[in-house]
Length: 347
Image (cartoon, rainbow, N blue to C red):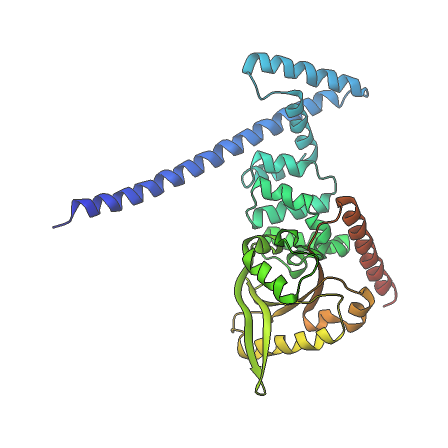
């Protein structure tokens, strides 16, 4: 005979799951309809004020409309909110594109994205936001940390950026250039002015959740100080991760000071070992990431590390002023793009 308590427990679990699922679907539907409402309001305002060449006319219309809507429908219709609606309708003018977007992101996401002027940059944040299921807070944090400028894709020609984003949008497959950053911001580690490689490694493991958030949610931790033996000699991999979308292992080698040429041979040895003994049939070749506190671009260029599936990136343990970091990143982006154009012209 069945125990009523067990039946009740099973039923409770099943019904709770149905309730949660229904609530989630309802919340998504409400959010989608609200986003459409705000976009439609913005489109209607845009249609009205586009016919006037006077900026003050638009301001008057929005101000008066806000006052009347607040009187009729209560709070939530400030002139600031109406400007958000207008901005969204201007940024996402294509209704079909917006309809797809509102089914995947909240109004807060969409509102934040609408204020990114550069189309490729906006596409980058939009696609990763969907792919990695960022909250609106995470989206803001990544914008403030200049994630796009720190991603390898930003250093590529615009056509390449658009192509990689198109692949992510259409297939859900993320490329390595979208996955890796430079520099990595590790200010959450709380390291003092003097620290060793072991201190750095210990701090990363202590703050592993923050570390993975900085690297991207596709990274899954596998091992620390993984021992490999070659010709009776032991070597230790600082950190070993698996990247779910790239379907490959990622070795992270932590170094103090600037990048040195000898690091390449060491990393190549690690990667070839993993390729021979650890890589599974359905996996891609492992990637090596050498994290240094400084690097020399010409060294990296001459060593042609990309041919060995090796990347080098700086890490920052204390965040400099945002304008200084932005200036440095833009210089790095321009240098990389100019170099690419030079190589293409001389082929």
